[in-house]
Length: 377
Image 1 (cartoon, rainbow, N blue to C red):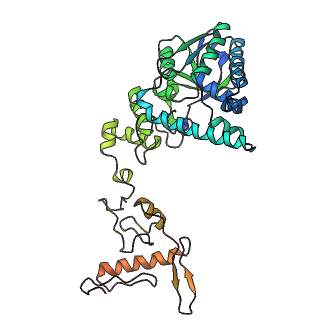
Image 2 (tube, one colour):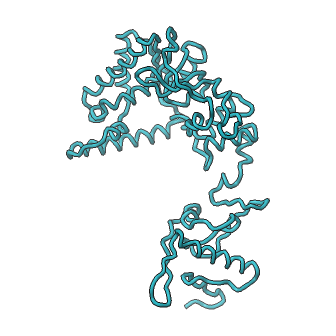
Image 3 (spheres, one colour):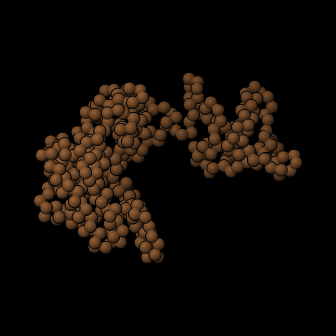
């Protein structure tokens, strides 16, 4: 739900997001993503909703109605939009979220039956907004003569359409997907007093990085901004490895379109086991010859790599701490912290000796490799 790393737009760029009150749009229609409010107001009755008590639904409906009445008191006309059928493109994501909520709800019910208490946040993570809850809220809205719309699929696209056709002046939602849909004005994190963070299309066009002073996108277009959001990660496609919103922004500014940016992406960003050397060519790491799971170095990367990171990159289990036997019978822990510096220096000296053709130096704890010419016992 939302753009991955959307907070980077506000934190790293001056002019994106300003404090505003919904009363600035008095006399206008305002689109409401009601699912965000229903999830937020479920905090007052999360336990009752998970346990299936009838009082939970009525308390939730009354909490949402109080918010809408506050908007009317500020002079705006709310237009509530409900989610419709689930999108087929998000079937895998929706199923994973549903299974996670179901497991959390089952565990909370068992804890409740056993007399164990749980925090409100745990109950909220198990709340599911069912069609029955939405139906009860719609009946209450009809009784209060509040306009509501049932979207064919998700409410984000419907709200963006209402804003682009100027049926509503601003959209109130915490979902940053509305920016990718091209919604011209989005009011996020609105409190009960009507104050929130307003992000507009004009702010994104004029945004500049606070440190470098560079624009958010050199050649601004909504299609390019949408490509940046997709590259950063969305619910419709698997995320690319080591590609966040800041990297996507840099690649699009450098190459101009998403297709070229993906094709020429540096190997280090594509493969976690590839290390780019300081030289002009990319060097694939060469292991020093130690056994799998043993500490070692990666050549071509400008120094030693932590053995646990190397094992993670190769898909191996993390190595254990290595102890070498001392002449007095004691054991010295080579470790992975400050004690590993001397050991890594020894490995680098051994590698330089191999490059010169010198006889290799074996560490005290390194096992001898059997001679392939000698028969094994």
